[in-house]
Amino acid sequence: MLHFSRAKIITILLVCLAGIAASFPNFFAKDTVANWPTYLPHKQLSLGLDLKGGAHLLLEMDTKELKSKWLKSIREDVRASLKGIPHVSGTSANAVQVTLTNPGDADRAMTELKKLVQPIGNAILGTSGSNYDVTEGVSPNVILVTPTEQAFKERLTNAVGAAVEVIRRRIDGLGNVEANIVRQGAERILVQVPGFEDTKSLKDLIGKTASLTFHDVHPTVSANEAQATRVPYGYMIVPSQRPDEPSYLLQETPVVTGEELVDAQPGFDQRTNEPIISFRFNQSGARKFGRYTKDNVGRPFAIVLDNGVDKATGKRDVVVLSAPVVREPILGGSGQISGNFTVQSANELALQIRSGALPTSLTIVEERTVGPSLGADSIEAGEMAALIGTAAVAAFMIFAYGLFGIFALIAVALNLFLIVGVMSLMGSTLTLPGIAGLVLTVGMAVDANVLIYERIREELRNGKTPISAIESGFNRAFTTIVDSNLTTLIAGLVMFWLGAGPVRGFAVTLSLGIFATVFTAFTVTRLLVSVWISRQKTRKIPAPL
Image (tube, rainbow, N blue to C red; front, side, top):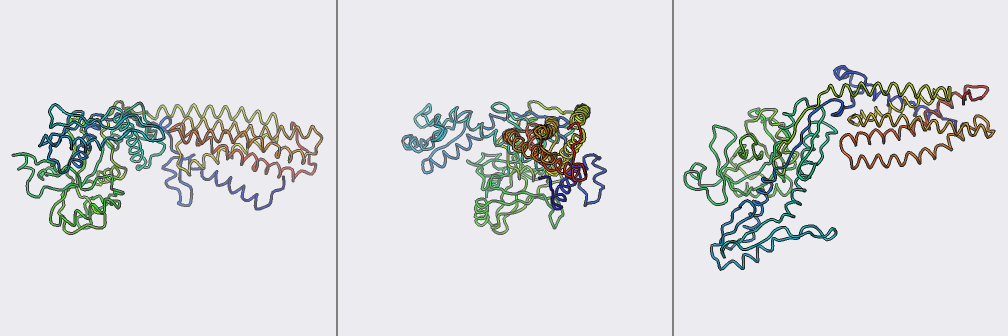
């Protein structure tokens, strides 16, 4: 119907004004917008890597370290399985070697260790072998537990997937959006983040494993004594982060692992005003930590940070952040870490701990920065293309439909304002494919208006009155336009779901453009035509329509 109630007119105008207001900050510099009053919109579109420039890293998983960690985990499972059977276990390059004190225990040990063997896969997708091979060694009292090749491939796949999620959480924690983080090949990860002028800060953020664990300190033997004689079985020597403090002799198996931390936030100590990190465990970690502190009042425990292998030295970067003495049971599941932090280092470490530890160290295979000059050229070329395209479309619409063509151009302009405004409020990132999505949206919006106007022409040729032809043209075109745009919307949602980076940017502008097109074509254009018709006494449609 061409009749619009006052409430409906006000609603349409408010929506259009809101879209214009939300997109308005994008026409000014950030410094200018920052000085605006608080009641005005401040959010602007972020520019993607291809427009603004940024950092590009290609990372590779350290498969040797991943296998080494896995073998240590297998060794702990072996020790738990053979509890009560005297033995010594150690790791080699590819297997866990178990040396039995009594060769007569070989059959019983073999039976217990074979319980660790599990099939790979599941009942739905099927199995593809087992996780371990348990075989006899070179002598009767030696048993080897060897991970299979299929099991390692599955573990590597899971580790790469986990690393992608950890990296994404760390970058998102900085407020950057639409970073492109995707897997490449079996063991590589591509990271592209807009806005970084150098890769150093990005490498410092995502290059550390940042695994936090809590260990028991040996009650009687110091690290110096262990170095002079022999390190006790099941213990390790870890240096302190502070150079003026001695190293610590710690139990290898942690009391609580970093996986049981649910939050870590930077702060300041109320007594010394030095930067600290407050942490909180989940229920499982809180129970373990509470039970440990209850049983070890008066004894120290060590908070250990594992940053993986230092690529410069080839040594593992593991340090004790602090080793406080348990004064009383800590039953609340929370605490704080003080480790000679600066404000920046406390913020970075808290973010790394909060986002989770990387499964293993990452080696930088390729790094480069994309300068903003490329983005400036792209923007300039995009602006020129947009101006030429807009002028051509405007000329065609006015030539083909006269005054109604001007109504369509007004609707298309509001369409763009609505898309940019919503994207600004969402904090979306604009990329070159996103600009392509905007151009495609303009074409779709014009196409919707052309379809409506052609329907009106057809109704006029059939002898209907102008008002009846206009109403019938809008109604008949509505179903066709919705059906055609619905399939495009489905494609856009699939691209957003499965895509990443620029592909998602294109999907966002395309999907928002569909909703904006339907709104402007069937409300804004219709409202303009209705207002014009109501003010014309002759009720005639102007040529060339």
